[in-house]
Structure formats: C-alpha cells, structure tokens
Length: 93
View 1 (cartoon, rainbow, N blue to C red):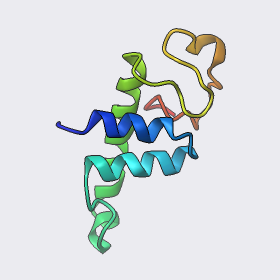
View 2 (view 1 turned 90 degrees about the vertical axis):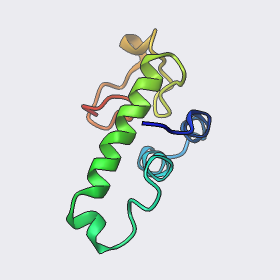
View 3 (view 1 turned 135 degrees about the vertical axis):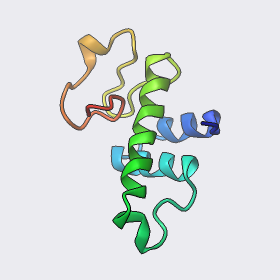
C-alpha cells in the first residue's frame, strides 16, 4: 500500500478528535471511500477505517507519531496510555 506518510503524520499531529483524525486518514488512503450509497452497504468505509487504524498503529509502533489522544509514544505507552477501547493507535482500540 502506498500512501503519503508525511500527510498522515500531519493529520495525526493536528490533535483533533480521534474519529475526525481517522476519517481524515481514510480519505488519504482511499479517496472517495465515503462517497455513494454503496460505500457503507458494501463495507468499503469499514475496511478503509480498519486500514487507517493499521497505518496509524504502525506509525505509532515505529516511533513516528505520538498518540493524539493521550500523548503517549511507543516507549512510554505502558505508563501513559489510557488503555481503553477508544485508543486511536491500536487496532483493538
């Protein structure tokens, strides 16, 4: 998968709410993913959102970004992470 890493890092660092951040990353990864009725019916949006989560998680794990929600980085995540289901930098979140 090819994507504009610098643009995604900028989006993550904008410190907007998590859902907005992920939606903006989706639009970088899959332009037009939310357009049209078929996008939600066929799961295009859900698949694109999962991909966005994976990209954000990978950038976090590689030390390229901090969590936009709690400010943790990969090295201090155990001590700072809010560790709940809304975490934007883990796929389980």
